[in-house]
Structure formats: structure tokens, C-alpha cells
Image 1: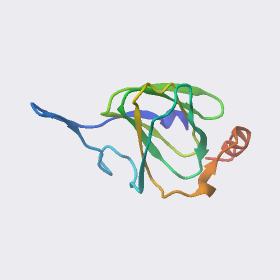
Image 2: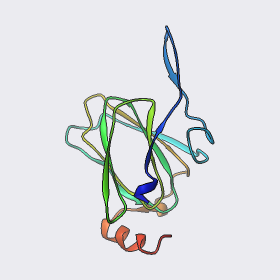
Image 3: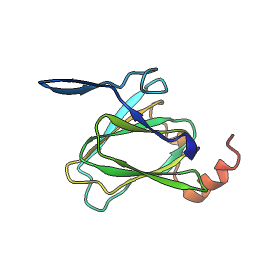
Length: 136
């Protein structure tokens, strides 16, 4: 699954008043959008994520500041430095993700494909590694 993780370049509409970026379903966002949430005021040294999803897809965008998104398919890890509000990282199902190294005043926006469902989460890494073996 890690090979499906990629940076999505959101369109930028620029004029003298500033820039505007658009995240439209079936355009830049490769799935139907069902929920949006954001992380902010993350303390120095704290990490978010630390889980995978069975069905949920997501695009994570640094609206402000910067952070690293580490994706992991159980065999290989890759780190993406997020610091531009017109870039998002696509994270498919069965991909372990951690968000670390938040700069001060950073805001991480997540656009996701499903409503919240605790049953969709895989919160233990060893369980994730076991389940990924059976995932297509």
C-alpha cells in the first residue's frame, strides 16, 4: 500500500489578493469525501496518528506550519515533509500512519472517505502487520 501513497498537488488560483486552493471530490481528492477534521495546538514532541484503517482513505494537508507524515506498509516506511497548503498526501486503507515533528502553530487538515467508526481503526502495530498479510 505504501506505493499508493503520493503527494496530491491541489490547484492554486492566485491573484493580487492572495491564493486560493481547491480540494474537490473526483478532481484532486480521489474518493468521495465524508468527513473533515483538523489537528492544531499539538505540543512540541507529540505525535498523532499511530494507527491504520481498514476502509478509510485520507488526504492530509498542512494548512499552516509543517509536520512529517510517516507511512508504513508493514515492510517499508516512507516520510513525507508537509509544509505547503496546496499539497496533500494521499493515504490509502491498510497503511499505518504517524504524524510527527509539528512546528508551532501548525494545522493538519484531514479529508477522509468515511464517517468516524472505531471498528475501522487498527491501533496495535503488531495486529496491523498480521492483518496486512491478508489484505489484497
